[in-house]
Image 1 (tube, helix red, strand yellow):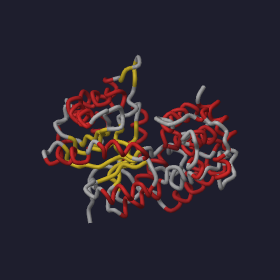
Image 2 (tube, helix red, strand yellow):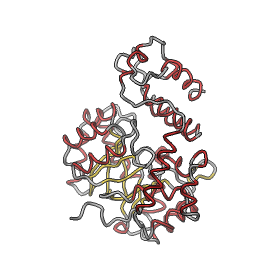
Image 3 (cartoon, helix red, strand yellow):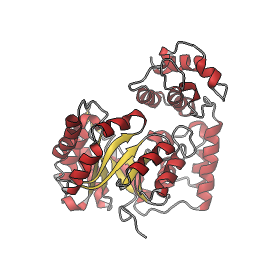
Length: 373
């Protein structure tokens, strides 16, 4: 039995981290990357209304849409109704703006962007679901789905309410496979239960799995000395069933050539390779970090409404991967429209409720020092 996107090659070009020159997208290098990608038979391109303040969509037009027959590639973009839209009209205008920026005529895959937490409410309040279904009926969208950042139970509820969604885009990588905060495996299994094919984002966890800490990458290098560390992460994701494609945000020809070296003739992981990834997962778990299981008991009576588990997830990126810039970006996302760690009033309610007996007050102080300065 076939599924939507089965015939699409399993490496997608994510246009979120395009090469820059003097602070602007390097269009000529982007064109070169598009040419290399297309020459190898790869055809899926992913952008979004908000990527690089809309310049990613504009780059897609110049480097791809204006230079290749429209039926030779698939273009996906996303509508973030929660990002500044103050009315249904403003949210809907995002669709028309994306259509104009890209010049695509229609979108092969269109996504409600970043559902989960309180962000989903905007799509409900503005009835973006019905609006996009209408555009699909007009032929402006071929396939409609959504990207998602939340727990598996929330995903299950969304797919139950919206069976018309044809696919989902999920954060899946081997480091987050059993993560309490991300629930990659559980979300994947929910999508499979509902019969929805999956587009995978963040297979290399924002680049963190391309350079592992404390020599853990030796497990990979000893088995396959010539294979990049990042290749293990991409192949892990692509080896799952019912995958439309695996997105990689590539910023250089070198990154693209590495990805193409193993994805143009993609071979799923074999048993020995899976065992090596399991060893790496266990080594990552051993690194000291805040032992938060994201049960969220700490938040139930927090007078400041601080998103404690999400803050600790951001801090742990620094503790485990020693990547402060990524941790700060994650922290900014975690506290978007929420209280900061520094706003803790040390009431102690969270520590009383925490089953892991984490010294939350002190951990929040350290989080503020690390991520707010």
